[in-house]
Amino acid sequence: MGYIFGVAGAVPGEQLQRQLTAVCQAANPVGELSSQELDVPGFACASLNHQRELPLAGTRVQRHGSSSLLAVAACLDNREELVGDLELSAAEALLLSDPELASLAWRRWGDACHDRLIGDWVCIEWDGERRRLTLLRDHNGNSILYFACQAGMMAFGTSGRALLALPWISHRLDELSLACIVANMEPVGRRTVYADLCRLPPGWMATLDGRDSRLQRYWFPEDTPLWEGQGSSAYQEALRIGITDSVGRMVVRAESPALQLSGGLDSGAVAWGTSQVHLPSRAVAGYCSVPVHDTQAAWPAEAVANELPLAEEIGRMTGVDPVRAVPAAGVSVLDGIRWMLDARLEPSIGAGNMYWISALLREAKARGHDLILTGQQGNGTISWYGRPWSRSFGELWRHRSPAGAVQHKLLRPLLSRMGRDGVNRWRIGSEPWLAGTLIRPEFARKVHLREYIAEEAYGFWFHSFEMDPRIDRWQVIEAGQSRVGGRWAEGADALGLRVRDPTATKALVELSLSIPDREWSGPAGSQRWLVRQAMQGLLPNSVTGSLSRGRQAADIVQRLLSDTPAVEDLLGRCSPNSQVAQYLDIERSRTTWQALSRQPFTYRLQQRCLQELIPAITLAMFLEQRQP
Image (cartoon, rainbow, N blue to C red; front, side, top):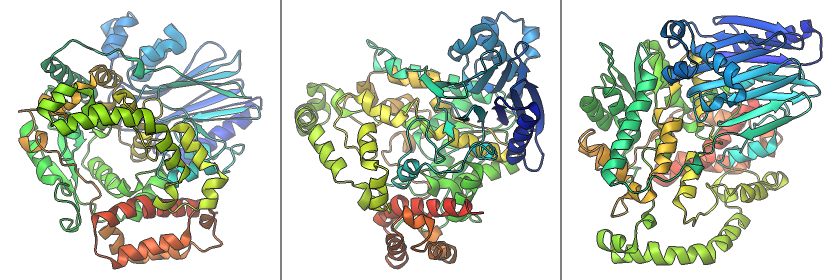
């Protein structure tokens, strides 16, 4: 998407320009991006564009009155509808980029334009008369926007690391955010690991006046009314139409689109969606992460550790060609984490996947692709599991089993009413993250991690007996909180790519939430029943008929072991007196590593590696990177 930055404050214009230049240089150190700068009294702003961008997408800064500016980064999916709403002619529309079109929408509807803009976008207005910044971010897209407000100074940007070049933004850590990441959680809301730097969550707007920042949520998909009274075939058809529409709007402008393709339903449905879009003489390629070590002995029989055969079947049936294996043989796990820390503001959960993600994106760029589609957020939207208890007692008795009917319709509601609160109090009180991660107990208690988790009812550690399946599902979608899109945006921008997720669009989120939960699990309470039925005959039977889950990073333990000298060198530098020892149990980290090194590789060791060692390694590398 490129970058946009702005700095505001009651200081001389030359000082603002120097600060803005420092930020732009931090984001674009080799000067390979085209830039545009504008300023008005009290405010300076810049946009930086990648040389190869999707047609009409990008960033732009425009004057808005005598003392105000608009800054926009946008890749819009509803240009045709927006042109009609703005009453523009076809000839006028052809001359307008996405940022220019979004700017016209702001001029027409002000900050209410968020109801009109669909796609990946951020919009910022500087109101010179009121000396106020208004920030907007898309509903649930692959975008990112950071901001800071301190002592009369304000700043925003699509790279948090670049904003740290500002002299008035300290590098002081937010230790509660660090504790969350080590405990395999994401901090909620505006928090980042830097105390003075905030992120704008998707579906929110922020107002900054130099003294304070106020956040307001504008999108509430949980209020989507249920679409009752239809047969299963109608819901299946609506799902197919929604997938085709979301994929088509994203892929149609790309010169060389590609898919991050696994062997599962989510990316498989996206692959099928591309086959429904008219792309003359333009094949869609697929890229599939594969292990380089033998994983058969370690994983349960129902797990799919190598998804390439299934991905190739999907490719043959949907026209995705070629399907390329990405073994990431030359990228170590530590290399992937290092890439993440270079590209992003902060460490994050899922760091163990960064080696294959970085390898996949680099290979796609090297082969000339300008757009990568994923299906990462499909678990909460197009392929929601469904909850068996959404069906009636009689349906479960007939189609599942009498025991299943009693369990889900009698015992579960009783447990929910009588035991949920007590079980959760016991679970939170026992602090399970102390046993399941390497966080130091005194550090977790110092930052009040237990109280924070209890207050947020955080799903990873909070036992759910929730009878409302939409609330269960809300913890998966995380609309208004999800950091997935922001992570993709920062990683892709660092490589000059655009990564988008058609399973996470506003339309598909709202459609999937409108479909009654009983339809997702089907008459017998079967996982992902609706999408399996919708894709029946359109994807291979080996995909629609399988309940197995694919495992990317399936050989991560063997990859770490093959990089033993680097891992042991890193752990060796983590002395009891080092900064990392304030947050992590260093001895336990070494014990975990020794267990991985000496014991036969098993599924349990794999989970221990992902839950304990990878977060510890990530934090250690992050803290080392901060050293002068």
